Length: 94
Image 1 (tube, rainbow, N blue to C red):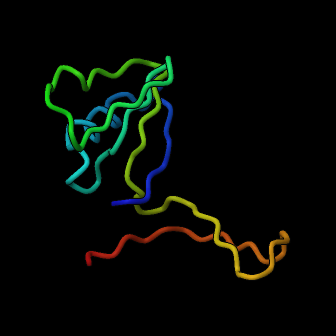
Image 2: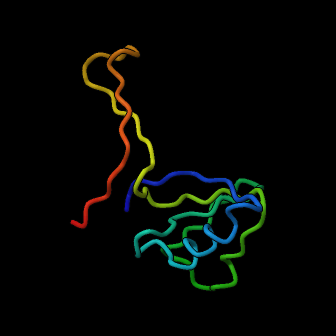
């Protein structure tokens, strides 16, 4: 639940992201932060008022990493493109 993916709120994913924000930062899958258009972050782990969870089109939600997300890993110590590996995420229950 420490790894997050930034996802911009659109009319197509508004309801999905709203459920993740309502779930909060302590339940998986959920969301940790809301980034407003003016650049301010709202931390959902320490949020006191439920009215501060307001979402608008254009906000960015930092949601938890979920199944079928893609990540890129780098094999150390090399830093060139041929050592980068892409993986599809499968979240395990532990």
